Amino acid sequence: MDNHLYDYSAIVDRPALQWPDGKRVAFYVGLNIEHYQVDKPSTSIFGGTAGLQPDPLNYGWRDYGLRVGIWRMIAALDRHGIRASAIINSDVCSRYPQVIKAGIERGWAWVAHGQDNSTFQSGMSREEETAYLKNVVSTIEAHTGCKPQGWLGPALTETSNTPEVLAKLGLNYVLDWCSDDQPFDLNVDGMMSVPYSIEVNDVTLFSGRNLRGKDFLQVVKDQYEQLSKDAADSGRVMALCLHPFIINQPFRHKYLEMALEFITAQPDAWITTSDDIAAHYRAANPRLLPAESTAQGSGSVV
Image (tube, rainbow, N blue to C red; front, side):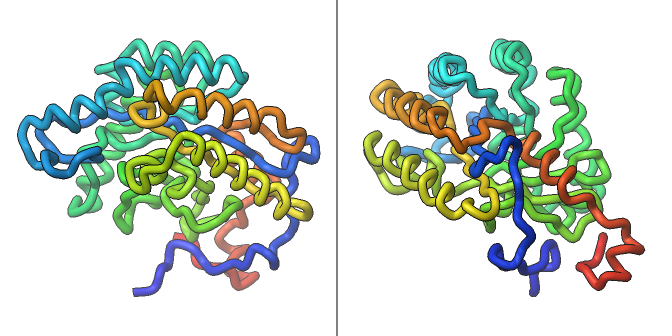
C-alpha cells in the first residue's frame, strides 16, 4: 500500500530553512534511556542466549547503561554544555528516579518512548493504543513536570494510528521516520517529523557493524561536515543517537567526549534539542488550516 502519512518532497525544491543566528546545522543528542523486561528478548550483544529466561548476558549488558553508563554520559554532556533530548520509557520514571532527577536539574527535553523497550504497539486496536499512549504520556508528565512534545517508538515502531493518536494527546512531532535531513509536516493535523538517525546511532555502529571508537568519531565528523556543506543554502539537522549501555562503555567513552568536543567547537552549529527544533520549524512554517490546505491542493489533513 502507499504511504499516506507524508508526501514526497525533494529537499532541493523547498524554501530555505533558517536556523537561529544564521547557524547551518541544528544538532541534538538523542539520549535513549530505556527499561527492558527481564523475561523478553531485546537488543543483544550475543544472539545465542537472547531467547533464554532470564538472559544474564544480554540483560546485564543493557542494565549497565542505567547503573553506570548514564552517569558518564551526564558528566560528558555537562562538560560540553549540552542539554539532552531524553528519549525515555515511562517505566524509567518510577524505576530509576535518580536519572529523572538529574534530567530535571539540567532542563532536559523529554521525548516519550513507550512504556518500556520490550513492548511495541503492534497488534493493538486503536482503543488499546490510545489508552496505552495516554498512560505513557501522563506518567512522564507527572514525574518530570513537562508534557512530552515528541515521540520515538521503541525500535522506531508505530501503528498506522500512532501519529494521529499522539496529536490528539497534544504531542507535535515524531522521530520514527528517518527519511530526511529537515523537519517536515505529516498529513496529520498538528504533527511533524523531526530527523532522527538509525545510521549515526551507537546500536547500529557498534552492535550492528562492530566499529571501533575511532571509527565512531570519524563518522560523527564526516556526518557533520557533509551536512554543514549541504546547509549553505538551507539548514539541516544532525541527530547523534546514543544508548549509555553502548557508547558509555569505558573503552568507548573517550571517543564520545572527543566527538562532542568537535561538534561544540563548530561555529555554524546550533546546539539544541529536538523540542526546540520542532518549535522553531513550526514558528517558521505555520501549519495551514484544513480549509486553506484544501484550497491550495496540499496533502490531506487527518
